[in-house]
Length: 78
Image (cartoon, rainbow, N blue to C red; front, side):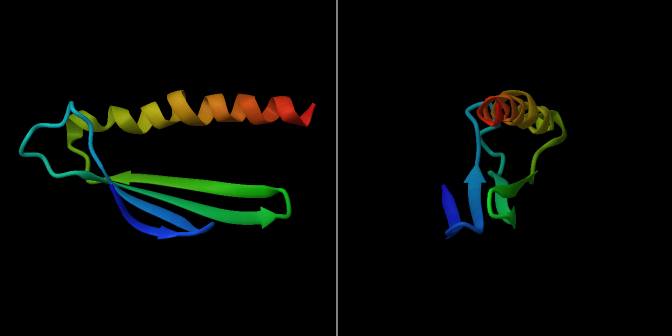
């Protein structure tokens, strides 16, 4: 669920998966977009309010999103 949207700046979401316990609070996902130059933007993702057993989701962002995105965008540079 989107909590806050600032176009081209920030996305804040209440985030959960079906693997969370029923009484577990939603986690928070914040994505920031920081322009570095005309063609480059830094993306910062902060995933918080996770239980200790849910910390694997942080690695999941790297493995399932950032590494594939990196490969995808590197292809366009060639």
